[in-house]
Structures are given as C-alpha cells and as structure tokens.
Image 1 (cartoon, rainbow, N blue to C red):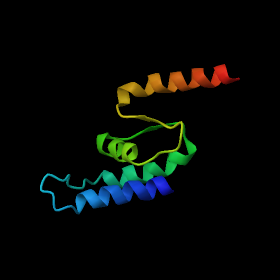
Image 2: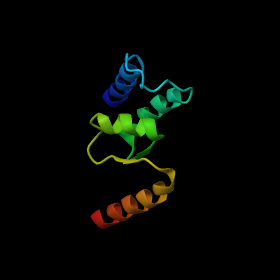
Image 3: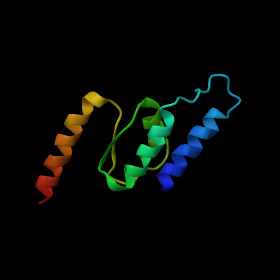
Image 4: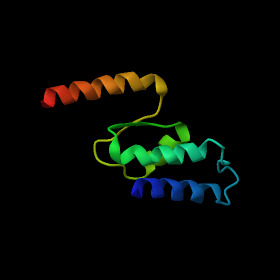
Amino acid sequence: IDLLVGGIVAAMSEMLSVNPTARKPLRSDAGDYFHMFYIPYVDIWRGDRYATQLVNRIDPKQGLKVVPLLVDLPTAIERRLRERSEDG
C-alpha cells in the first residue's frame, strides 16, 4: 500500500507541477495505479513507461523485478522461474 500511495503522490506532484513540460494525465493512469496494488504480492511487475518510472522512483519491495517493456516480460518470467527452481 505504501508503494501505491507513493506512486500516486509522485504522479500527482508531477501533474500539479508548474513545470510546463510536466506530463498531462491520461485516462489509462487510473488503471496503472490500480495495478500498483499487486506489487506487494508479485515478483515481477510490468507497467507502461510512465508507471514504471514512478515505481522505480519510489522504493519497491526488495526483490521486485520491474519490467519496462512487454517484450522483456517472458524472459523475466523464465529467469524468475529458473531462480526459484535453483533455490529449491
């Protein structure tokens, strides 16, 4: 939950910034915030570029693999499964 709140606070701070180059909110952002709820329960997390940047800026749980590109997700899953099988 702390990660979700941190992500939302970081996003809101950026959106409300007086910086003219600040990113404008998108409709899909709400879904990304809901997906952050899964972070305490998963080993691998994938979001869009913006959500991935938010998650990487705050301190995610130790051992969480944040995968920024969909194309990299299968490799990340295979690697995590291999690590788990080696740990016994």
